[in-house]
Image (cartoon, rainbow, N blue to C red; front, side, top):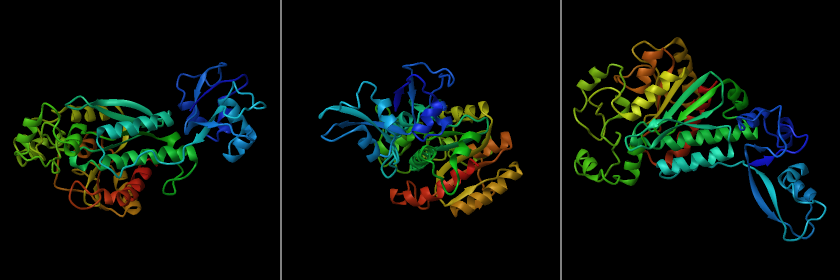
Length: 393
């Protein structure tokens, strides 16, 4: 929601007027000097949208404000050209509306466009969240990196490394939505107060690492690549078992953590799953994700996958002692089984632990055959949200 500064207004006053943490208003207005507001300057207030009300007989600003539990001055601020003492029937006035419900509906097929539409709606309502690009996919789709918080202490989360595990994307998007709602509406998540997390920790979230693959699973072959992907899929038009990127490379087998060994026991040519590529980091998606953690000093990393109701937290004895403490905590809040080692290499989590000696986790959400049914969404989210919120503590 946008407002314009009046004489004597301050960001602190706006935080009181709209019951919104001052830091969220400041962070929603980068480039604005909080100490030198100019009359007429546009200020964005997070957590609100604007609706239009048509004046009826008997309406007054006091009556409208009282019915909506807002301050009269909020109406005056949004309607600077309206004389509150001379309202006319049929006249239109703007009403601020606090957003208290979810934008993200994850209980539906969730391709790249749906994810991007939800992302843009969240960015419009919560401008303190920032959008970057970690890189692009083979077909040029952005790998969005959404940031919440500005602290130097950073936690990285990602989803949909594997195409047919696309349910992990709406799970992560739903968590971002709940986190934003909690910050602007002053409620805790799983008993955790979120405003202190916001000020202490910067969240980096890449909701869809393999957008080309997800679109293939949900929408079928892209124009110009039908022959190629059908050949990789042995002529079948059923792409429900496709885990790889659009070139048939398994993105979570692409990292230089014993890649050469893993390659000896995996497919030797492009395939719907498990082909580690002809060399590590050969794909634009994996190179982007590797560059992301090289540039940023992430304290922790969580990669969302399906399935198994378990998570893996160690690699070759290189994980720090803190990982075990976090694993016990994650198991407690999710009910998932914590597994230290598994006979697998060259994953994103493996490489992160190897290179940085910091806690990394592969979270296997839900249980069954991929792609998991949307009927599991609520159960999966209940477990995942506990892990995600506690990972920021």
